[in-house]
Image 1 (cartoon, rainbow, N blue to C red):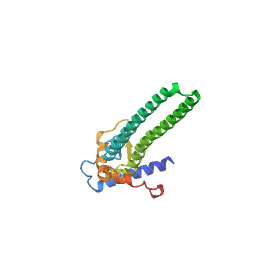
Image 2: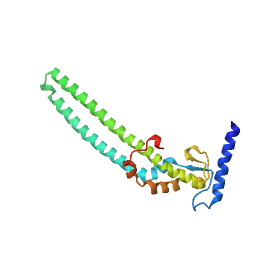
Image 3: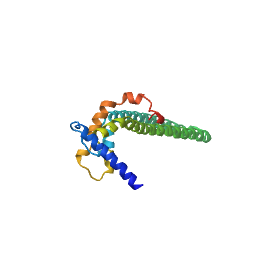
Image 4: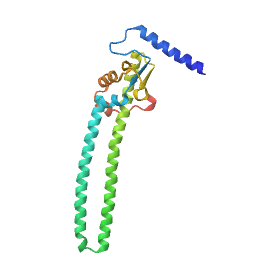
Length: 193
């Protein structure tokens, strides 16, 4: 079984080597069986990632403003309820206070859900980015003669020449741009991939 894996790997390397001989590589494109890519930097510095970050920051700022407004309204309502306490029947006050507390709990849960939804929007956008960027990365692997692209975080040491992050970013930016059209399209179903 080990021999079959070795023969397969040797065949892939030989195929990559013959592909490299077939033509001169484009200028600035490293030629290596293994290249590395910084996934985090690729996403964060891409036009797509920058737009998503702006969108998320904007949504978070809107939510923070909404939370401050709600908090001010609830504090005013609580002060008004407390001021009325002296003139109220204790049972009536307890009921109003319990209703107020229940409403505060519901509002807090709603606002927490909005916070989670913003975080999930970022996670979904990043997953969509890499799904849509994958064909560009596959083409880049072919162009570099790479058999594998490794995440830079998993590599102990490498030569700078095999890092294709900047090249991949430029290519992905050219294809995806800020991602507006990509975000509008639903992700492809698994069976279409």
